[in-house]
Image 1 (cartoon, chains in turn green, cyan):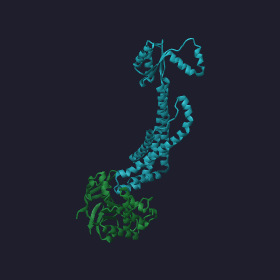
Image 2 (cartoon, rainbow over the protein chains, first blue to last red):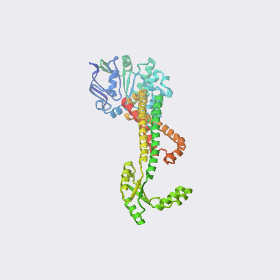
Image 3 (cartoon, each protein chain N blue to C red):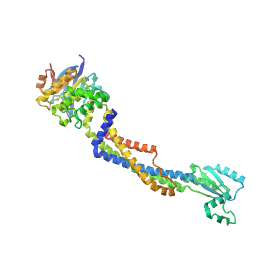
Image 4 (tube, one colour):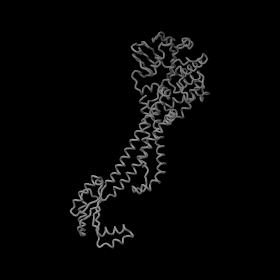
Length: 226
Length: 292
């Protein structure tokens, strides 16, 4: 299977004054198309840093990263935008725009990318259907539960039908019932053909999902199983 | 896409609220000042042009030449540098003109024992000679004619009018520039506030792979919208002021400057003001983005 993500000997070192703090140390991993990978490890293990490198929010101090055929170390500004158009990203905080409805939040992404107006409605409602939020399309973020807000955020991430979805602690703020809802949605998205990388500090969640699990500890890959 | 970008720009303007309103007011003031002085300057320029066309230099002749000599003299004067036209006025022509001028009192002329008026040449200066220096040089050249007794005529006061017109243009530009700088700073402030307010949108736009142009264009557009709004209000104020003031001033201006009508700005001038507004606003938006 061709690699969707290839991380080769990646280091990420932050400088705090004169002190060098390694966030990732010699990380190597390979994720193929159609996988559901859980990236786990305690807080500060380097999960978020690794995800940020994958959607080119930051560059590694050393090493090579290839995502969807892009060599991230050599991307020009326009290519970074092209890469990101193929990746959906969700965070612990749903990051919804408070003055726009759920529909407008999801449609915003398509409008920004110049999608024809006639396609937008259909695609937004398709995405809302996948996350089970069609009935809340006209609600504002302040009127949503945390679980609904996170589902809206997922709808926004998948509305462009990206081949890769990166989820950084998407259940971090949720109770157990809402967490189960989100995991179900992520499984549905994966079943639809999207490669999913889910970062979570919860080892039990990784066990529960029974998918390939990569465990990070102090910036290193300490286990890759499943 | 354009609809989306304009929609975002309008949304941003609403967010900026009072600061955006202040920016529009300042752009209105600067363009109204600029337009007002431009209007005054334009009309003074028209008056100057009219008066320049009417400037004449009169060469009074020592004696009335014979008709053939008069014709040769006119031809000779026409060749003098700075002369655009020459008209010979005989003693009889001069007396007829005087009678016309006197109207019902023309009978007093009949009491004269002889025609006291000299023959003369009415010289129309060329455009190059319609300046104080040009006119002085022309007067010197005409005074050097052996037939000339006395030469009169000056363009000094026309030139003074022209200087006033240039002064008005400079003052207008000065005030306009000072107000424009204030407007620019206010648009920049409004855009900086907008940048802060829309940081979440910007973050999401970058995250989903929007082009930098799509991210930046709404900022430029909202600045241009502020500028265009200011320009349209300034023009409306100028039109209203002109339509109220011009009919009241025209009789006075007609008597003093011989200008029957106070003209409004030409369509090109109006377009230039609108473009200046858009440019001012767009520049403010761009500067804020550059600062960020």
